[in-house]
Image 1 (tube, rainbow, N blue to C red):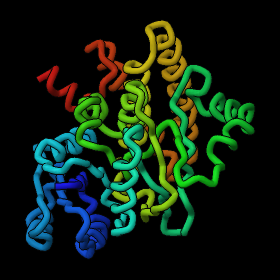
Image 2: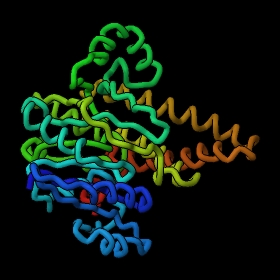
Image 3: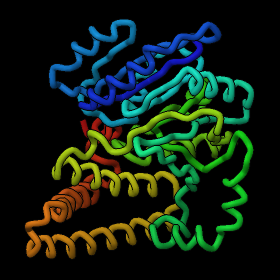
Length: 326
């Protein structure tokens, strides 16, 4: 098998249906591919329905909502392809895009991960000029200042007319990687439950000398948003996990001294912001969005207490946490 397309789903059935329909229409005489859908235990009765509807695809049910990294690794563990395409369920694939990703990876062995252009429902292309978080550009203000001060250099790097350009990392929505590279970096890091796992994956490739590339020869539709933020409670959970994943990334990628500095700044900044917005939300209770901050403050308080008690930054939802604390 040339390509294993691996899709991790959690209650995103409507988007997944459109994604699988787009893949179902793809037929190629030049390469072979399989499709593996890992459902992170949506437990809503739709799994057998989709398994029957798309019977030529492989459906596997996870033991729980074990996170994106775990779902990707689970899918890869049964895949037979020489290359893996990790694809979000809210995307639509074409033959041309799949063929371009494969040919780019084969003809450029120096590339560890290749992605492509992504366009949303408003015909707007996603910005793909991502830089690795670093000491001088980890937080929003410092990151904006860094980009402003280095604008000519960054424009030269990304505003080329070549078929390929090279950001530091690409989103996990579309990641094409060879089995060889995947094994070399030991797959996705299951310290992460959701968010920053794609940054970590690309960093591992880069640390081993591989390039991260985006090809302009292919475009994939990617609908932003979706099932991860369907209500206030879910939104608070996912936004909390963004912050938790930042803590995990800091603990995995920086030296001890820099870790202490960044972790302290992150905790202080987040708590001050959430306390202030929580107080405001008590007076402006008629604005539902502000309630998210109260829920996030509660979630983060529990997380920080647990981190202190267990001496780990890993999310309690992440598989590596559950394995350690089983």
